[in-house]
Length: 328
Image 1 (cartoon, rainbow, N blue to C red):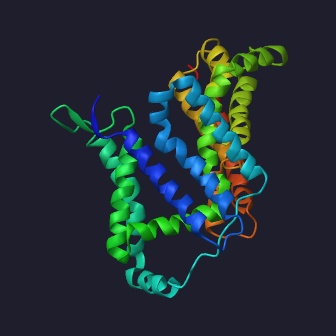
Image 2: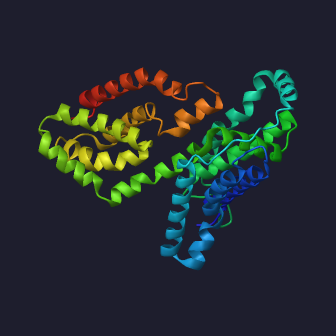
Image 3: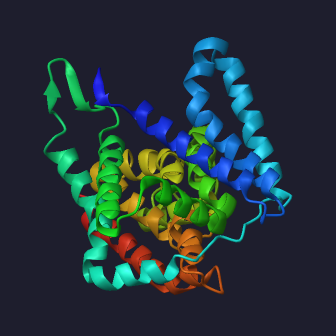
């Protein structure tokens, strides 16, 4: 199905930005590890830009092997602590503070534009089309809507601050240096769900539950499902990766088929239980490690420590919600 804004366009733009970051890192002589840092981001951006080309020319098996080697090289660079941070020029800080003072609360308008435009496009404009061309990629509505929203936010930010897109890329590079390899973690972890499903991990969990848990004990199964979602998410850093494993292992065979739970309500609260695990793990880098880096906190785990009590309380509430409201 043809679309003006496709997911391929989004991936290409991400690849171009990452490649610009790699180029800027290579030119930064203040970074003693500029070559390995540039190589890391080049490898990361390579699959975004050239993945489709490799598939078309080399075929799936060889392309997958190349991407796999790329991931291993990135892991080796990060594991060997070969990524560095340059001395970013902060001479324009007084000017930026002056602009921020003049804008006041209006400085938050570009940031608020992102969720507002994303929701509007997803809900209102999702079926909009020119002749046979849809505006948004129908298979990736939210992502393409988010892409347009980010472009709109960038435009507003440039208008308000009189900056340029290139300046935005330079600032992005400073943030990328501060965050480091953790920036790639969400994408890596998102693939784990597919890996565990292919390995039939859900079936293994189901067999383990049969060995140690009485399948007739509804409350025990609920606790196992919710805490399992949270713990698996803590391990993998992504509730979407934990969801197919725990749902196939506990929710579907026991709570739905055997105890006749409402499937929609059960899996929705189960996913919410996974998000409780997101609040308690450094593996969820985009939620917990990245904010600590951006805020320049001395303790990089401070965000997690503050969130743990809330996460445990919400997890307990989820267990009670399933017990009292999900079953007929």
